[in-house]
Length: 166
Image (tube, rainbow, N blue to C red):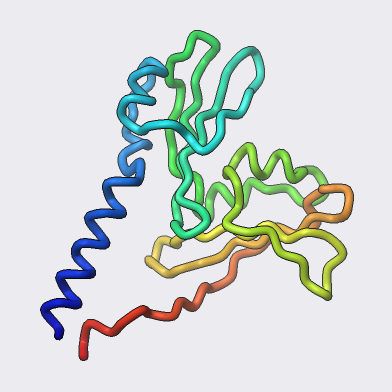
């Protein structure tokens, strides 16, 4: 029984690795857009930026904990590629100034959008992993006009599908 569970777990890890853009943050500046698509596939979104630049958003949301932003200049060459679901990047969110569009431009689509009785507006939820390798949520509370009013991290407690220590 243990052996079949371990085999199943290994197969799931291998299958999920094939479908993810791991290494997107290692794409060198100057890489042409066509090479990015060849290596990473179609992004979840293409977001227009200033002066004809674009951001390619590669995300593992809603189930995964990583999102890569690959920025291209107006000529279609990479200027920057990075994984953005982390504490340092989340701390850039400025309540009262950022909008829902700003959050989604910088972090991609959220894992989910919720409503709670204690808040009059949507709550964007991002799944991420902190530096201690803990499963986390990052909540972004929007007012009815789509302005960020507060944002904070929280622990995610996951149910384990099976225990490998049976």
